[in-house]
Image (cartoon, rainbow, N blue to C red; front, side, top):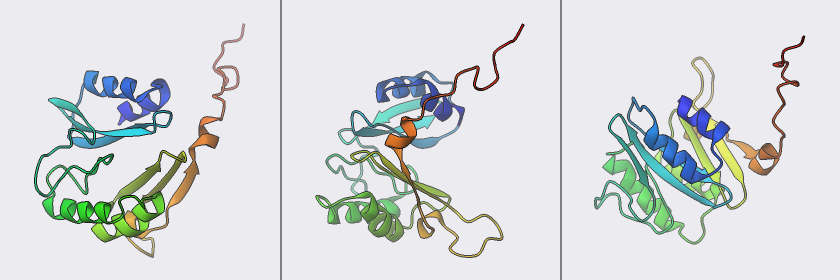
Length: 176
């Protein structure tokens, strides 16, 4: 997951992030997402040892009856090949097309599809807001799965406005 940290630290655009995915020494199979708040666009990445395929709403993969293209939407319910989950997600996304928001995604899509058991995030790129939830740690009472738990809301405009500390402020400069 160092690649995600490097993207956040060094890349300024979605194109730079996508190039980093493709040049990386990849090890595990994942579906990742990367967005650019200035572009207000996001894409998925089929990420694996032999592949780093950039996926958007024009080339949505896999091509299947249970995973149909939806204009301006890139979606994966659980993993690459999860027809049951993808069908439900496809239905929910189409149901709210034209009236979609982060709140709708959390309340009426993720909770119905029951996707996001370990972690879940929803990016509202139009408003620069990020919502995330995590599964309950072992021994914690309440709902277990991330999609059942409370979400934390982060204002990305405020976070990105925070000035990075200098080497001096971090105590990393050598003194004579």
